[in-house]
Image (cartoon, rainbow, N blue to C red):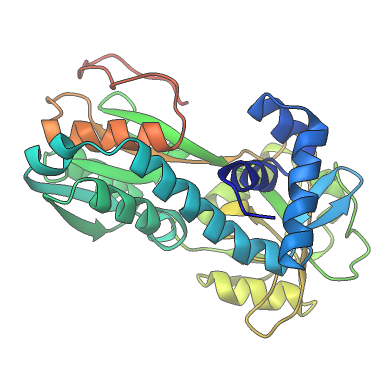
Length: 316
């Protein structure tokens, strides 16, 4: 069997949705079509890509590795189908783009590599900082664009934005934990478990906020700014945590398994990542082309972003 773009597209949709049925709805195809495509892929590759669970599917280690290749395949195909010589040659100059630490490490760099391939004439000047600092740099005109957590935007009246992806937050557990394989878990069920608290960027404030909203508190065993430390501690049975799918990997650096379970729907907010810019100043041709391209590759329905205006834009 030859690997087709359809196989890759169906696989990626199922991986991102976490459910074959939901992926089928998003793709507007039958559930059996997605199931067959995944089964054919697994048979051809000789590996299991998903673990089947009562409430959906989860990537195996092989599935996680293949996901990166499948996304890259779809990206290259998309760019080839939409290649414009005018885009490649007309746009020149420097575009200043800011990123926060976690977004840079787990999302933005591959995306910006695609931007660079599409607009070879542009000089992408990249910097990393805290979200609040980046927002001020946008407002003051020292940055043209930023790729940050749009769910945490502070200067909503001064910045415009488009959310590109939403990343669900789930409970991370060591293999064999009593809660492994269970879903729809309220925070009250896990509040007595030792909790590993990630502190990098705004992770600590975000986590504490949704715990407080439910009037429960995690039993914090350890605080760290290292995602890899969290991963290793959870995998080795030293505690649990709640973090987004964007930073999840099924294996720790020393090869131990990390399971996930779903928190009760609506209790823990999703992480939203997107691109934003100064709403009070004209968006130049190059930054506007980049925003349009990002909207295109992430399947955002509306077209060119609106011209700047002073009104408040609600969170996407």
